[in-house]
Image 1 (cartoon, rainbow, N blue to C red):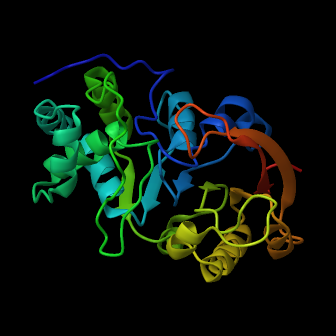
Image 2: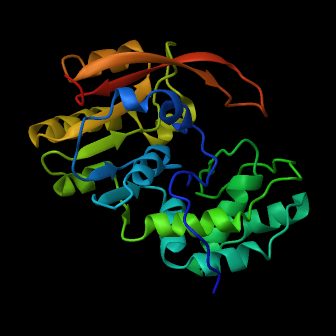
Length: 282
């Protein structure tokens, strides 16, 4: 049995993730958090930047945390790290960061859940740009990242992640399924796949398949239900006229600027604006 000490202030995220909200946590989150809230919900989990930030602050674990996503492999990875971290690490240690091994692992379909989690972490760390993408058959198809010095077996981090995830409720489900868990005074952080490009016309082709405009409209109804339950929400989305119109008269809106590094290794592609829609501050 591997043991480690928990570093309360500096745990997670453990995944690379396109659209990660590390930038939001680092510079802006304190401007949007309510003065106090009860339990926490994150229905588009991804790398979980906001979750890890908040649970790091909750030293005495006074809140309940509900995490969910429709990505089965992502949720399995969180569950296995919560419940079976040593087995996940055991499988990770058998893998090698080479092009040959990468494509071999990419083509595999393990039946053992702990091995599937190790595969997910390995591919996430060694793929090109940390992108998660599948083809029409649902198979992961991101190319090898060609970075030889990637540490995909950060044993101490993964074991501390496991400690953070203890007793956290983690489910593979759509955002609407968790509505019954949301009570008065809870906080819901909502970071859906962006359907429209930042301040440009047209849809983002790949994300449109993951999260269509119809889904955006369903999400608006979901947020209205959160408001009716007297809970708090923080929604991040692309700064686009269609999003502004969709959420007209719902909460407050603030535009934030950030650098984008999607699309090239260590290259900033430009400055983008994002919308933060919220009801957490008067």
